[in-house]
Structure formats: C-alpha cells, structure tokens
Image: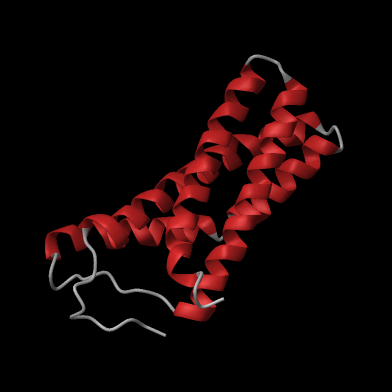
Length: 152
C-alpha cells in the first residue's frame, strides 16, 4: 500500500476532474431531456466520487495531511486557506445531498429531485472544481520545499 500512497493526491485530482466533467455532462443531458443518459452519467459521477472518498481517506490514514507552505508563499496562503475552508465545509454536505437527490430521482419523486438538485449540483460542482484547485496549489504551484513538517 505504501508504494501507492504517494500517487494518491494525483489520482484524487483526476477523480475530482472527472467528477466535474460528469456533472457538467449530466446537466447538459437533462437540459436536453435525455433522462436515461442523465441517470447513467450522474450515477457514474457518484461512483467516481465514492472512489475519490475512499482514495482520499486512504491517503490521510497512510500519509497524513500536508500543510500549505504559508511562510514561503504568504500571499498565496491568503487565497488558499479561504478556498480550502469553503471546499471542506461544502464537501462535508455533498454525500448527503447527493444521496438524497439520487434517491428522489430513482424513486421518481421528480419535484423533490429537482428541488434538491438545484442545491446539490452547484455545491457538488464547486467542491469538485475547488478540489482540483487545492491540489494544484498544494502539489504543483506551491509545493513544499521540505522546510515544513508534514502532519501525520
């Protein structure tokens, strides 16, 4: 397992990116009234998100979390931390919103499905996009230089 763990942040970013694409495709499909394709796409998106969650939690358990190198990039930290806070806060609600929205869709409770989807879609999309941005900031744009310890 330890040999896979260093790659998990990159896998997680790809999964977040794929979820973003599937959310947008699902939105376009329902606007085109392609309900069956919308259903398959959104269930696929949920599956990708479940795989992401398992991968993310696996990385946390085996590698801990990483600090943003705020001492090295203080200006970037002013953007990073509010973005991360909003991402984490909203991400905590996505599984509950998604499950409820999916349930209402699968049980043909269309009004409730649409009512929930109006909240679930933009929040889930925001979380998916900001997940990729957090990854880019933490691992690509402003990487650790070894001066700050990892939290384990």
